[in-house]
Image 1: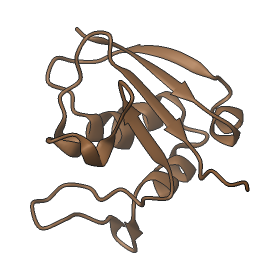
Image 2 (image 1 turned 135 degrees about the vertical axis):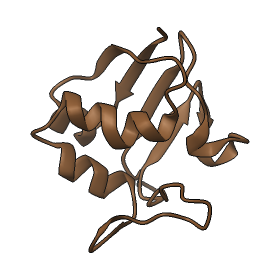
Image 3 (image 1 turned 90 degrees about the horizontal axis):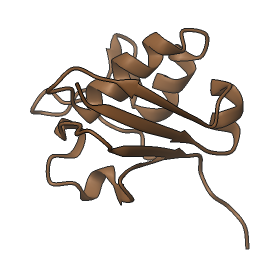
Length: 111
């Protein structure tokens, strides 16, 4: 079973109650499954808020693209080993591997 490290930044860390955590995931678990199912299961108190922040949500649930994949909102940056999710060839279908580091950043601002 792969062990992945999750890193949360800024107010995401505050809401999650931790800055980092490690999870064991089943072989074949995708990034989308981790974000949409596993992390919310581990943090039920913020599950709806997290899913609503990371994904585009419609009345009947998370919006799916034409291939049936959940659609990220683009409001938060999700990185896998330093690469943004959209830059991964598999996107949310990326299968997690032992040692992967998934980082989540809120919108950045400044000047």
